[in-house]
Amino acid sequence: MAQAKTLGELKGTGYTPRSVRQELRDNLIKRLKSREEVFPGIIGFDDTVLPDIQRAILSRHSVLLLGLRGQAKTRIARLLVGLLDEYIPVVAGSELNDDPLHPISRASADLIKAMGDETPIEWLHRDDRYVEKLATPDVSVADLIGDVDPIKAATLKLTYADERVIHYGLVPRAHRGIFVINELPDLQARIQVSLFNILQEGDIQIRGFKLRLPLDIQFIFTANPEDYTNRGSIITPLKDRIESQILTHYPKTIAIARQITAQEATLTEDQASMVEVPELLNVMLEQLSFAARESEYIDEKSGVSARLSITALENLVSTAERRALINGDSQTFARITDFWGVVPAITGKVELVYEGEQEGAYGVAMKLLGKAIKTSFLEHFPDPSEVSADGRGKSDPYGVIRAYFSGGNVVELLTDGSNADYKKALDKVAGLRKFVESTVDERLSDIETYLYMELVLQGLAEMEVLNKEALHNRLNFRDILADMFGSDDFS
Image (cartoon, rainbow, N blue to C red):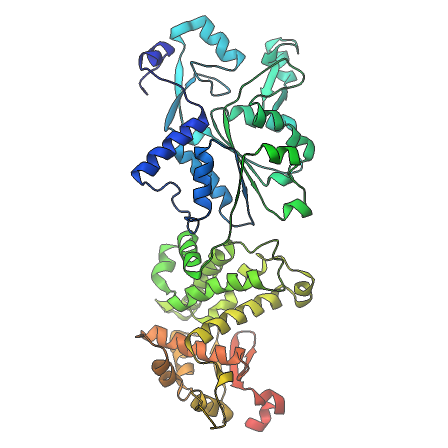
């Protein structure tokens, strides 16, 4: 069929036109029957969002994807292109992707009338049948629908009564394709009204022309629930005309969130070969996002995008890479101290409520980091508040470590310290390695052992067993009483 160059040749192939919604439906049915993946790269929606979208396509519905930022709404919309036929025939030179057998524009109809079966046709790839528009307050009806073009009228020497002076907007040009409007509530109400006829009747009207264009478009809209109160709203009549509203959500488990982050993070080959990110830190990165979504300092209506974890991982790797380059290490591994380089990825991704503004963006980021450390610590080690430190009852597994710091010892971890300096500092703590090796119920590599040793110190500091002092380029761990009585008493 793709060999046909004229209308006559196309007719000879037995070509039968289909509506774009029927096309999507037919191709989805084929994929479901053959058990092919319909939405590659979308993780965590297999039992929730994706079945709803498939039902909407089977029902030939327009769709509103409603969810907080960073929930893959636009990506899902773009993947729908894969359900279109690879190529469709159009009248050559047509502005509106006219079907050669059913043209809707005046220019294509006149061309077919004049040339008949010799009318030239072209083949349009599915990637060229996708149109996306971000709704902003300055979008006009002319942008979306069209308007009279005085320059065209003057050039062609036509009166304004001739429909050939019309310049079509984005929506008519998406005929026989998919049209996506992102952040629909940001579209002014009077502009939303212009979409009524298209959704209900499938046609448009421009500047009073007695013109009916039966457009064939699959509409996909995206919106953030926050927009309904903060910036705008979807007017009720328009919402009523959108046939399926589908709610998206954030990853429900750490495992799913990790898959998304690993898939989306952009790391260079040099970074991947130089920096190893242990399993423990990958989990902690996701715990940062989960902690942020539950934090009293962050506006839950605004949400915490999955981009937080993605950019945090990129920053974590870059922090470790920079440290390795400074120290001349050919290879290194990420540490918990490297999380201080992740703070910029957090502060720009969260909307603070009043209490959060009082704490400041940096302060909130540090609290989230502390919560992630505490969560990981308690997942792997006993809670120090539930064991006896005075020898009564159950023995204290942290006794030797406490005694080391009670003796006035201080552990200094340089944020840019070399691998050798990092290991040397942790090895100084009496009983720390033995405690980790006897407590963690798995075989640890050398790198993992030191990482868990650092986690113990960080966790004890978060549990207020030790004092952690964050200075410009280092962290100091000391006995918590040192600050209460003055460090001179322990010198």
